[in-house]
Length: 335
Image (cartoon, rainbow, N blue to C red):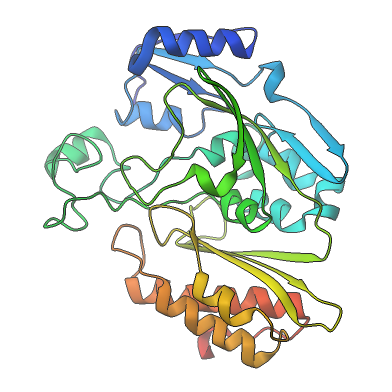
């Protein structure tokens, strides 16, 4: 049985108190909202904090508001609320779908939006018990200079696996970040970098306090996920596709975001380029699918073969775009 190591737990009454604790204890402290990821990591000795700072109930991280069409969600909003809230489902159905595809219902009643945004990268060689990792000599992400995915390289290839993040990026969402240096509002996309070891660009002690999503206007968004089982599993590939059509029905703009194929949520720039200025037809959808297939470069760091994950990236983007266009879905076995 995996057991938690000893740590102190403090739940401050406000955001300033949480920031002060993080500044005082430095690298010995870690933030926890729902704890669905952190507590597992502590049991596996991937994280060994001396202090856990509980931020789930902080008033600054709560709330739901609409202002001039922008939806603001507190970072402590539970995933189950995003999944089932009728207003969110009406305005941003892809975000509700993505939240509903995360893990199991029991987890979604505890896990938070901010926690999913800050989800650490994952790898078959990393997310294991300490005994398992010791048996292989550990990995670059924890306790070794060697990446087991690419032993001859000089970087960690752990993969991004959050489901809400590609949708938020495709929706052009922004986030408010609070830290020792003050408050800043940045695009969600700018929170990530292509680095398996340090995937977040957040400065130490900074806390994501809220997420702001612009009005959907004429944008239509879909999210599709491929995983081993139809519940609980992290994505092997996830695709968020969003298009905005002009009065003539052509695609004025497009955003296609991939997850679980790189160490960060990657924009499929080639697919976006080939879609712009064209009608959303079988031809343009197939061309976008081929562009995603060329760009996606998954590594051997999750279940499934590399080629199958590349192929499913193409299948998922084509499936999402066909759904947006109102075209019949093709059988993935013949795609």
